[in-house]
Length: 283
Ligand SMILES: Nc1nc(=O)c2c([nH]1)NC[C@@H]1CN(c3ccc(C(=O)N[C@@H](CCC(=O)O)C(=O)O)cc3)C=[N+]21
Image (cartoon, rainbow, N blue to C red; front, side, top):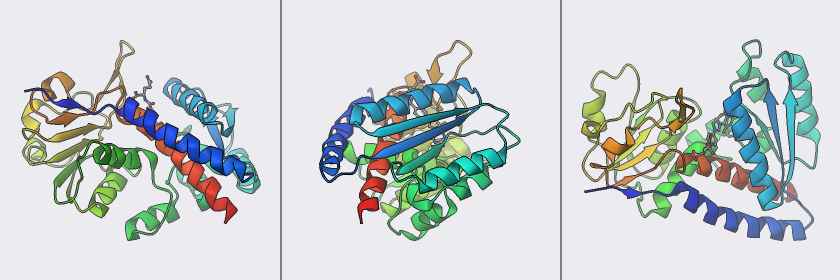
């Protein structure tokens, strides 16, 4: 038995076609979706993502700016820049690439972004909206995970979903979205004593821990849907997920590859959020 591949890249491309059509309609009404990506310092992984985001904007005909700031940029300078983009009508989405240099307090930066431009969905008000089920911009990776499930016919309703990882950017919000989709949700983390046991009860398993190849065949219920959110850069430069892919392939029913799984969806959901923010600016 070999799992079916969840082709994130392909699914992502078809969603981008939908977004592009919608963006063109909006342009007809005089609004071009605009995104600014702010990068502080020289983190090499961040450079790649920032480039991918700019490329996606170009592909969809968005207005896009990339602001590259030196690692020594002060918190105050960054806050002033955000204040400026909060007021800039051409820009509907503001993304400050994380992680930030140590001397900048991430929370202060995220809090400063206008909620209506919070295309990452990291602002406390966006998080609160998600929690209570209000209409809001959703965090991109979690939204991408749900989209992958739905577009492969794996509706989470009534399923047992196990999330490994409890970060604010993936683990917690993806658990909340799965709950909203009527899954029964278990959240595991580094202090969970019997991880393989719980994990192997999952109909849907989401790995978001940042430990290369942590999830082995024995952790997977036969036929389960395995979503690998890990983006780990190995010493040889290759990208690797949190799931031991070759091992898992023999046991899972469906599985996302890394690269080509969740990663492209993250960027596509960012484009979708920017479009939504732009549409709302009309109202
Ligand atoms: N404020 C903020 N928002 C983010 O959304 C954010 C961030 N900071 N910091 C870094 C992480 C990481 N992230 C990825 C996005 C796309 C790919 C992606 O496109 N991956 C491709 C391959 C890329 C490659 O080859 O390196 C794939 O998986 O196929 C990966 C990772 C967004 N992040």
